Length: 183
Image (cartoon, rainbow, N blue to C red):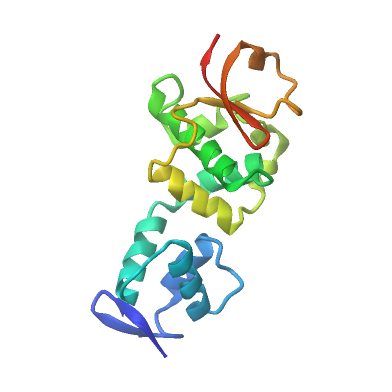
């Protein structure tokens, strides 16, 4: 079964597909045959056209795997029970912090900044993200921001930190409240 091109080489299932399989697994397509995973990827990421276009899109989405992995872990551990829009919003907050000039200047430092995200302290950051977390991470990286630039979020039913009283709430998505500014 022919599945596409890599560079100028025609790939067949079982030959040279390890790079493709690894990239698909990075996106959460772990329990599928290569052909089935590729079809699901094309559907989930709305890739139309040739299989070669699918491979280009797959490389484009996975070339920055450490960035995607870290962002997906934060999204999954902070918002896995939230609606899809809320998961994208959590990813957007992380990236808004990175781009704001008010927080550290690398994604790793933003995420691991002391007291920034409780999931670092509790260890849930290390849970394996699901496919939705990778998809929402990519949406946030592509610039989707349902929060309109918010820098903070919290769950008022769970948060006990006093600092949340200093935030000016802007919106609520799912159970998270999002804020852009301090009062």
